[in-house]
Amino acid sequence: MEKSNFVDQIRIYCRSGHGGAGIKHFRRDKLTAYGGPDGGDGGRGGHIILRGNRNLWTLLHLRYHKNVLAEDGEKGSDNNRTGRDGKDIILEVPLGTIVRDEETGEIEMEILNDGEEKVWLPGGKGGLGNTNFKTPTNQAPEYSQPGLPGEEGWKVVELKVLADVGLVGFPNAGKSTLLSVITAAKPKIADYAFTTITPNLGIVEYRDSKSFCIADLPGIIEGAAEGKGLGHRFLRHIERNSILLFLIPADSKDHRKEFDILVNELEEYNPELLHKQFIIAISKSDMLDEELRHAIANELPTNVPHIFISSVTNYHLQELKDLLWKVLNEENKEAPTQA
Image 1 (cartoon, one colour):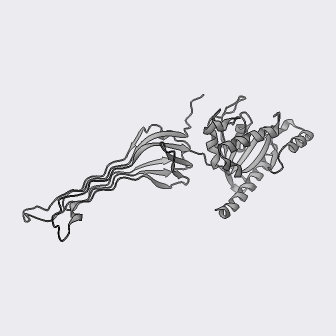
Image 2 (tube, rainbow, N blue to C red):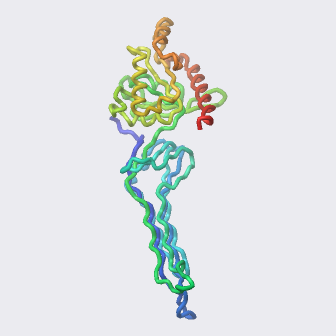
Image 3 (cartoon, rainbow, N blue to C red):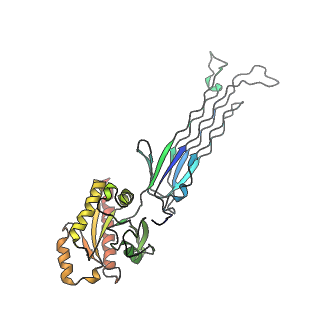
């Protein structure tokens, strides 16, 4: 497998900063021999913060962070001075990033918007100095609080590609070729299976300066839901696509069976994927005459829109864009009512 700069999953050890200790101190100067308590509070430990960055498409820059350790807060000092807060660590991540605890598998956070900041691991609270414990009956408290510890643990950071349309199909179905024709993306194209081993994103320029994002995803094979081939690594990326465009080559031996296998793998991985909008595109249609197109159309499910296209001759590519744009707008109109 060729080396790639696309990294969609990493494992890192994180620890937010410990809170600084409050101190026990009494005021002493040349004019005051026995002053009252003036021990300051400790500073807060540094947070670990995630920030969305739309210009990032991979987690590669985080691969070299084996340990992410935020700074501890400083302890308090005399004259009721609070210690300095620990410096926060801000990790910039691509949109569509989720983080989970490695031990429990629980999803802790997800970042979907550019510039969105969320405190992932909060720093420990600083301890209180003895000034805070002064009362009418205890004018000279002899104790203060230690700071609270930060949070720590092994975490898994995953990227799920955000795109309006996801291209789904068996290896060598023509997904990369279609992406290269209708967008400015330059995916690797070759006549063998698994040419695409990482997602490729492209922007489709539509009418009146409108556009939408389409993702060429690694080819699926039967058994992918069980981890065969690229398995879960591929299926993870289609969870965030509004529309799934099934690309089935015209020279397939059984077009309906190929579609059913693809749908079954999606269902095995996550049944909620079946609620997405499906569209079928029969690629390489330049080799078909009208009679063959009609015969293939009769094989396909009647409840899923289909279109015959050819990336080589540009046959029906504009009609494909029109169909995708129409369905995307219908999805956007329905979204508020579903919420």
